[in-house]
Image 1: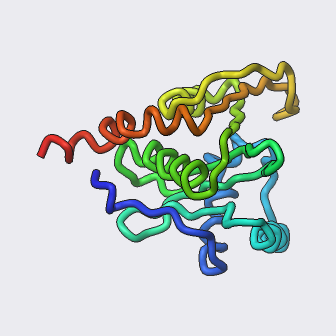
Image 2: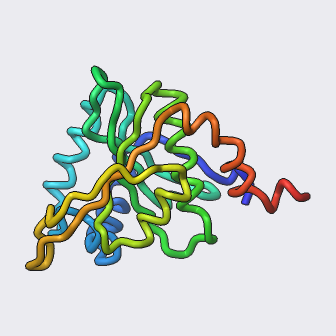
Length: 186
């Protein structure tokens, strides 16, 4: 994988149908707090709210020029200079490591372009893939919310993560070398 194969850009109206199909897929919905099928009207209302954000907070992740995922920032608190993120890969036909690239680019965006100092995340305790993902990207576990979300008739625990701008800056080069190691050897 080469860095120039990837891009993060603000969501546009032309992305809406594809994003809705990703969001409504069982593979994505099963890991969301709100896991009902989203109607087109609800989706358009969400998109209208994203356009009112103080900066582009919902981004499309592209690989080789095609839309493959979504990264969003929410719970934006400029006073404390922190926010949360959410994400999913919609395309399932991707090389291994594309999600890590998306996380890398998103941290670069939020810390270096938007100037935040802290990035927070949450994952269901049963979502081992997301827990490993955050650890791989340099997040530290800050806590666990016990029986926090009702899902499929059970109260599920949520793992809370965070990372900081100084952590990102200190580890950015090493993470880039791991992600793009195949090209570094050429």
